[in-house]
Length: 237
Ligand code: OAD
Image (cartoon, rainbow, N blue to C red):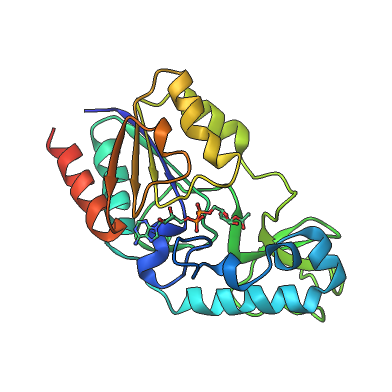
């Protein structure tokens, strides 16, 4: 059995918890209904902070009412089982929700930030922020009013923890991407990096990702069914 497994998750792992995905072939994704250039860029926020904050308020409220699904629980189980055998799971997520943590995952690398945190653009302090965020809110640290923004990565900004991710990718025995369309870089490029290191790669997805040809193995279907079955199989070997 592989000792160090690197798992990259995307919106598909949380889809069955009701959080929606960004792009799907039926045209129902979040970015088919909302303009990411207006809602997920620093320029969009500068132009119209109220609209951007309202978009994230709605997503935060939705998240607070959501629950982890069997895919999240299976990955938490995998982390514990690997640790008990002297191995490890590196769980990197593009998701800004906290459903992996609520399912029991202890170490989650949020490369696109976290919806339940706010960052002050004045003093750079990051705060836990589980409620609506408005332009009238003051930073609890520096008292600056109107400088708080969701602690999420927008288009044109650098994802977080890339050095740690690169290190983990170079030391993994297996790379698995779950519920991600392979459309957004740098995450979409991790599979190629893993391959370059000779690491076997596997895709778990509802439908083939844009970069599906880079994976050695693929399992298609809903994450809530495929992920628990894959974890079960892995732990039996
Ligand atoms: P996408 O919405 O691009 O892709 C979701 C993937 O999940 C697709 O491949 C779907 O086929 C798959 N999927 C849908 N339902 C599923 C289910 N029940 N089980 C398994 N798979 C399912 O989401 P991401 O790839 O995560 O970034 O998107 C990457 C980034 O683009 C996001 O982090 C976000 C977005 O713009 C930022 O906002 C910076």
